[in-house]
Length: 403
Image 1 (cartoon, rainbow, N blue to C red):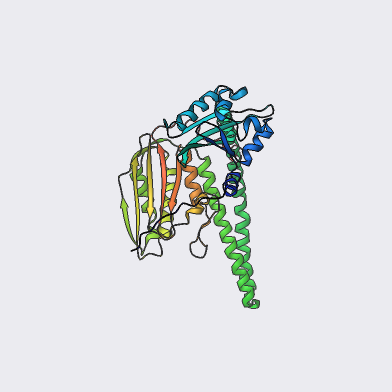
Image 2 (image 1 turned 120 degrees about the vertical axis):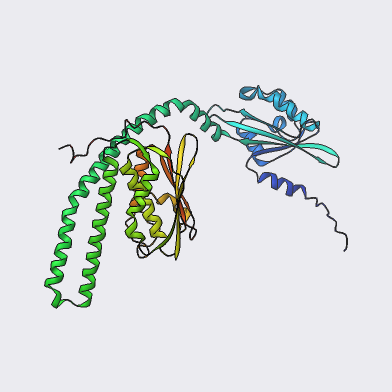
């Protein structure tokens, strides 16, 4: 094969300058003596904006001298940068970097200088780049200054949010309870209308009545789910040591109507004993297991597994299935009220089960998250802290209960 050679292309000076000018950061090139031999447009603009002159800060001036004699906000860092540049040009270090303040009379600013060497025609050169890091430094400063204030504010906001959530949940519970009667009336009158008008109904009329009936049924289901959420949020918790093995086995036994005629490989790993309310935890696991059964319905032989791992200060319990899974882009919607990631025609439900799970686990001081991919099943994780103060988890009674 013919030998391949690589020939370095020498770009015209105008092309090199255009490349430098395309950079937003300020850039200069210095020779082995520290003399500036090229600058980009950002360097020139910064120099002009800050009262500099081309003969003192531009091409031809000595950057080492500029840094050694630096005054103002960066007077302490100037000599350090000069020494760093000398070390780089002398081959004593491969690069140099330093953050420094460069405040103006009207604003606070910080920059990060980066110096890197290169050679051309046997001569030593270095690029000097100044990157504006003001936004990051201001964020760090605000974060440090406000840590204590934020912590206090978070405590106050948390207390306020708990009260607001308690009142909102009480309102949801009261309204949901009051809506049950109108929905029952609606379904009853639809049934009466269907019977009385049967001889005169045409196919379109029957279709409309079917739609109304289905909508009333769905509304009734949504109201029942809201009531379940209210009970999960407001019911007084009966705290005690709870064997999750016993809870999960009860929940799985309660799923028997849904598993009839199904081939499901049920895998139960070792589960811990946690502190909590056994009935609320049973409800949480019933929702998770019901989801696993529902979304594996398309498989001839399905697989549902539950297990746990010890993470030191907490237990993480998982419920995994090999069902239809979900698009991970929409994971944030899983635990939202009435949020569904699958078509109602494929999988029935109103989208409240996981909301209940989230609320119950949070009342136990834990957290819930999920992982999944379309066609590859889903895994739901529940974190239970090994130590949690349950003194403030029983909310105030709802308006209806307080009468």
